[in-house]
Length: 315
Image 1 (cartoon, rainbow, N blue to C red):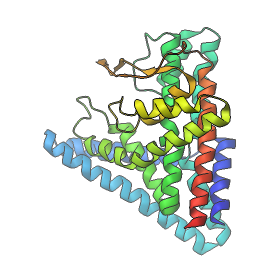
Image 2: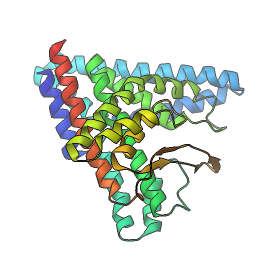
Image 3: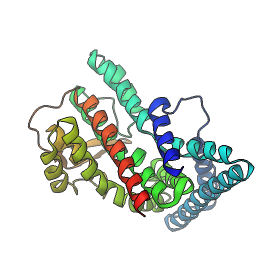
């Protein structure tokens, strides 16, 4: 029954994604983070105390998410087995983001193909933290490819990994960890102190899934007819070409598979951030690399679920 639940949730995400007007646990987690962050900032006024307050915020948000998820699921199973199954499927479905990530990438791709650069910049600004106002078509495409590649880990592989380790409650707790990082885990002045713990522990949580992503994306490249050997070679060579210890693994694998170059300098919150390049420019990046990256993400996600299902049966 466990594997039925996992696959049902995965297929539900492939079918529905995250409809904007549906209730979603991440929105609740986000509201909780904002409330606690305001309280921490009201009490803590120095860098050291902000770091401590950020640590307390992390413990409260992640702990509450796990405890509430476990409590709701336990109660649902006690009321009725099928209610418990439905609740568990729903929880797992909500932590997966493959369909919504692909849809967001296509939202940028559509105006880009039509030559509407301003519209594609606007759509891109919804899914990246960098300044999109001056980006041209190749830079927009690179940004989308990087986002899809990186979030293949955050949005699918890592949630499935923690699902294997501790079921739906731990997968939900991971989602809280990831949401904290996306909201406060930045290095600029406003969040450097309060978000330090969130950023570091997100790195810890994604350490194994990011490294698995290199193998999964390389195998996906083989299945999809892209350059699997280069995905492995570039993925290993450029795995450290990022300020994050995890992001370059999937980005380099995708860059190698497609024969393009990612990374490079970008503007974040008005500040120029110099980043190393990832991959080799065997050809110019093109808009067709967006659906290619989505295809790699989808196949790698399916491979991840298959792998974790086999591990579940073995152990």
